[in-house]
Amino acid sequence: MPMPKTCNVCDSPLGDPVYQSTDNASITTMNKVIPGRTEVFFCDGCAHLQTTELPDLDEYYASEYEINLDTDEDDQLYKVVDGRPVYRADHQARVLMEKVDFPRNARVLDYGCAKAATLRKVVAAKPDVVPLAFDVTDKYVPFWNKFIADGNWATFEPRAEWNGSLDAVLSFYALEHVKDLERFLSDTHALLKPGGVFYFIVPNVYANVADFVVADHINHFSRPSLHAMLSRAGFEVFDIDSEIHDAAFVVTARKAAPGGREVPEADAVRTLRARIADMAAFWRDAGLRVRSFERELPADASRAIYGAGFYGNFIASVLKFPDDIECFVDQNAHLQGRRMLGKPIVAPDALPADVQAVFVGLNPQHAHRIIEGVAAWRGVNRRYFFL
Ligand SMILES: [Zn+2]
Image 1: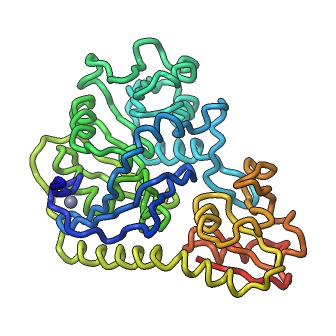
Image 2: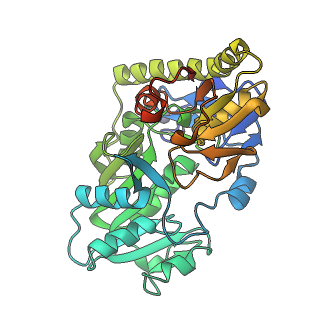
């Protein structure tokens, strides 16, 4: 008999899945299709959403999960504002400095940090900050050596002598991957001084429905599940901001005495369960909707996909005739000129005029606004598909 599933946050037993992918294939955040069926559960105890770990995930992390290792600049695009790129590390550093008032000479650890690009920006702006870095691999050491003192970084295990000495622990997009949340939080709690700040960013599935189906995110937090997790681990929630960073929760908590467990209100949990049911329905229908639009197109109609990220890749993966796609369109200058699935990625301005149909592979909450904003496409007679 398989072990009964329980919630990663509050240990409540989980019932039937709210969603299972129909094919025996799942898409990851790195746009890689891997074998295995995505299964998603909702916890009625704390409104946490949880995805079953795929068996091949360890191998996937070992081989695929290398974000931007090839460059020193953190060139992950956060978004384009008025035609200018804003990079993720710059935005994250700005938000962090707005949210946390560091004491002088604050000892700040980026926990599970990869290149620690955000912390490096903070140190550039506040030179008295003492940076520390930790990750479960040694491949980022050359990046840390550029701005972190020997003894202030560690691989595989944080240094025991750091315990109780840190003013802040930072975690950017890590907790959604962590199965043993209790261990992660108790390690963080031990590292901090009393009153020290635990600051982290996790995806917000309620602002970006893609997070619902990505196979390598096993935790999808909500406000109630964040409160439940932090209060169980002895943290006092200071602030949960869902506006300041697109499609994310930016969480600021303080180390307090262990004790008070917050129990979510039943009404709030029920409301979130209903929203999750809508998301499950969205993904059950999405593939059928793409193929139905594809069927209606004349066989010789030239077509493109807008978006070379997760949603664009999803559309390509469910098309009956993906080879009929002429190109992908993306406003990210770093992607233009590259290829995805063997097709060129072009700027919106460079889309050939004879393309008659565009499958829009963007977050449905923003897709219409983004397409209406493409000046070069106004007045062009073309059919659009929106997810
Ligand atoms: Zn729970």
